Structures are given as C-alpha cells and as structure tokens.
Length: 270
Image (tube, rainbow, N blue to C red; front, side, top):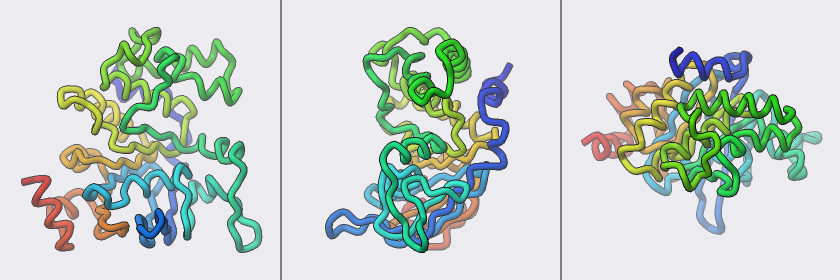
C-alpha cells in the first residue's frame, strides 16, 4: 500500500469540502514596525498554497494569524466562516477566552520548523496527547490512531522512542503525524525543513507531497522553491508585509510580472 493511500485512510473524509481560509485586510505591527500591511487572501478547500518571500517579509506571521497564534491589529481571518480567536457581536470582534480559542484552533493543524515535540513523551505519546487531552478518544482508540499515523509517516518502529532518540527528519515526521491526529480542516507548515540537515529534507518533503494529493488544505511557508513549484496549486509572493504577486507556479516562478518577484526568483533559482 502506498504512503498516499495510507495517509488518505487517516484523513477526514470531508476534507475536500472543508478548509476554506479567508484573510481580509489583515494588519499586524510590533511596536512601530508594520509586519503585515493589509493582506487579502482566499485559500479554497483542498488547495495547496505556498507562501514565498525574503526573510522578514511577514510570511510566517501571516501563516500564524490563520490559527490565531498571532492576533491581528485590524482585519479578519476565518476558516469555513468561523473566527478562530474572536467572535462577532454586532459589528465588532471580541477576543475569545483561551479555552475557546484552543477548541477552535483544533480545526487548524500546524507543523513548526523546530518540531516542538514534548521531550518527556515518546513519539506515540506526542501524537495522541491532544486527542486524549480533548477527550476526543479513549486510550485504546487513541493508541490505535497514533500507531496508524506513525506508520503512515514511515515511523511505525519508532513509537516508543523519545525525541532525543530521533533524527531531525524523524522528529518532523512525528510532528506531522501529531498535526493529523485531530483531523484538521487546514494544515499549516512553517518552514518545515529549515532546521534539518540537507540529507534529511527529502523524507519530510515526501510526506508533505503525499498530503498535498489528498484534498486537505495546506498552507506552506517554505524556502524550498523547487518543492513549492512541484506541490503547489498557487504560489503567493510576500514582501514587506504585502502580497506582491500570486498565481500558479508556472506564472510566479516561470514568468514573474513584478520586479521584486523577478529579483527574488533570479536569486533563488540562479
């Protein structure tokens, strides 16, 4: 059975009809530094979107607004029409209590560049921690799910290993399995290979490549331009907190229209 088929069995059957992300006029500043300067972006259910841009362009901040790891100063972000960190009362948005934010955040999985695994938990325990904590599953069902997900990312034999006993690539694959455990509508990837040694990058990209074929909405901040070209339905180029250009990989990477995009593409593709 292929890795793609295996992962398909673990994903929500409704994935192809859910996962609409709508970002409207989003602004974000830190002190006097404006990081996001009016972002408008709609990501369709099942779409794979890669966000590219130079360091400091705001792409990771933009990604983290989707699941409210970053609050916004102005504008709104919804997933299937639902605010993750806010609720609308009349014509004003009010920030939710943390408990409700965490509940809504389960709709959006995220894979961080530095793995963020719990060091005192095994690979299996890391994967099933959230379903157990949220009382989504009993212990036996959670264990079955976790072992299945580890198998689907090629780590069935590492269930009892602690993060320190795993390579960086293996840790990141555990993190991907953990993100899948709550069957999210959207999965965010924040530079998922940037902390890896070059020889370990491929094993992580293979898993993401398989996910991209299954109809789950994926939003990927990456510096792996060749990979983005291969898996993305759309590439969004961000610079200085604004979307400068977006389109298919062939359009943005093969025939960029904006001078800033052309400059970036020329540097990264040589």
